[in-house]
Length: 459
Length: 98
Image (cartoon, rainbow over all chains, first blue to last red; front, side, top):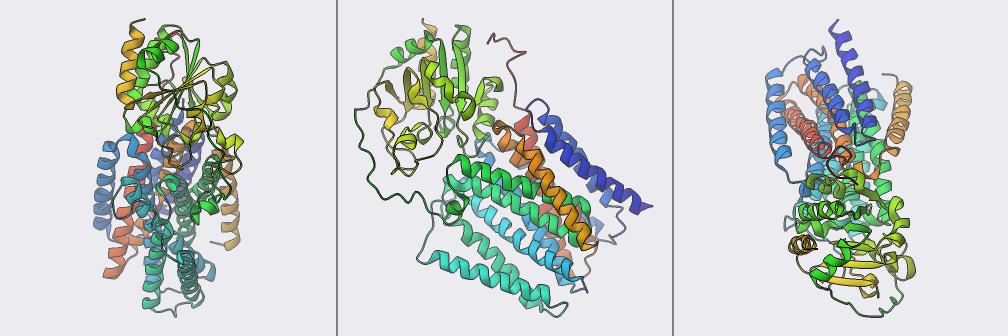
């Protein structure tokens, strides 16, 4: 009887997960989507206490859920929206670690297992361990912990990593094929090597590529969970894990494509690879004062704002929202153009703007808005750089050539709010800044934005 | 479970994941990654079963770690996703005339 209730609950949970993810396809009902999925999770967790497969350790179970869940609840409620990517990495890593730990418990018992079960247990252990230690390094990098930030490389790194990976896989195969005959020492070394590999694989990857890596580890954790679900004979874990595995793989591809960085380049850390001379810049950067910029916008018909991560760093999004409201009240049409990689990961900028109170129907993707720049009076660029650099269209020798960009340079006037004169994170000179229709508005994003608000109010 | 039944489940689940995600707009990609991160928090159920079957001290310790981490995955994933999605508002019912 209990068995029936347990299986039925797991089935309902699996349905709710898929329904919840599907509901997320639109911002209107996305929130109810996650709530349905949450209900499924609570149901599955509570019902597991009467799962006949369990015969003890209930106190430890409640303790683990209380402590782990409590800490996650506390940190999740407090984390700033700008720090969201690394928190996702952290929670994801925990899931991967849990999948690996499940495999460890099963493999420690050295039971007679069918070959397919033993193989998937080992595979899930490998993938889960890599996702665990890799995600922790990704977290440390994005959090700006000194020892891990930046790109850590040494000679023959790829060879060392390949050898390490080969050895780990070899040990895994030995365990999978040896029935109950493998030694616990072999098992220990296998887990250790898998964890080290996750660290080594992530160390050489730079912070800007981290979103792709986090998304990849998210997919890997899903796979590991799905495989361990097979080991435990739990279809809900199998379905939820593999759904996330394939969804995460698709998401990773979308992100890599948006950044114009093939996944293999991200993982094996080659930036650019261009050899030719970059096109020379013609023209000069021309500065503009706040009142003149304010006039241009106040009397414009259409203004398109292009925010980048620099805006979030300067905490200027609330001021930008105020400016948007002010301009809208004057009858100016204001739209936001979001590049797929604006912020720290795709969609991150949307979250930051949503937090500041910008309505999402003013926010447009690259594909939706690129045609409109030609009809815009002003394109206001704040804290963005490479994503508006026209050399991506014109200069085949540039490392960012071919990356889809926002065509800000097609607008009648371009105003760039920028702290200083430096190049973007790719180190590529931005030809937009030298264009005839472009004016530079130097200063801290938040201060400039509030000056603009005051200036617009006077007209 | 029969290996082939598992293979069928994996295959169908993979297509489901692909279909469900391919329709999500870019503006929701971050919450979506976080939401799918939450969904694999179902590993908590497996962790509880593993801990519930643990006999030796080592097994119990590792099982406990599994439950601890899995609970962090599930709860953390839910909290941040819910927070992000709660922020999306439209201007249609607001005061602006855009």
